[in-house]
Image 1 (cartoon, rainbow, N blue to C red):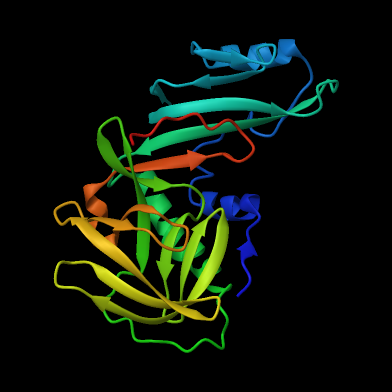
Image 2 (cartoon, rainbow, N blue to C red):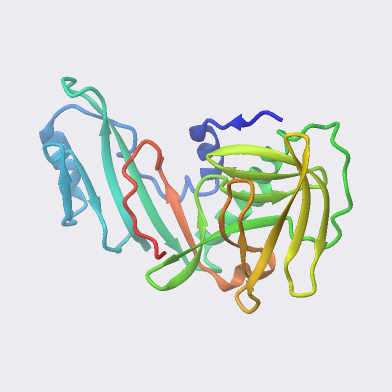
Length: 255
């Protein structure tokens, strides 16, 4: 099986459909003609930036702040272009906190279910034999801990998606693994059997916290903590806007 390399900006555009109307950042991907123009844009935010680089063009805000009724946990701004070029392309990366049951929270989850999941299914080979999944959770969301609390982490399509034909693991890259079987265990964990490069392999989605629904997974290059739809109401969402591959990504999550 060949690895499918995603063009991150394409999936980002899909992932942002649900939220584009809610957060218009008119400074993203705009040309900056001069240092004066950049300074004017920076001053419009009325925020004291705590880190400056490259002749004051690039910056990051590490402390949370409120903006138009939304909490911003982190924001950075990078300028992409040749050092001798008077014009730069501005890439702003923002990490928002969307509380559960809010309109923005619902729009992210609805976008994952109605747009991201159907889109990813198109990468699965139609010739793969389907299996009966029964009540097995289909969507597995990344959990990250920020300043002592766990959150669902939403960046483009990142996560693990289970289909009747394959398990799709995506974190920048995308790779559908033909699924051969899945078994729920007595302790709440799930045991997956799948094909990787024509070889049968297994993976354990191990229950770590049955109250919050936190699982640990270490397979398919997707090592980390996850939850599923059953436990979503336990978490607020940290939502990423902007390209962390192109911009500055300096937010600090708990280890």
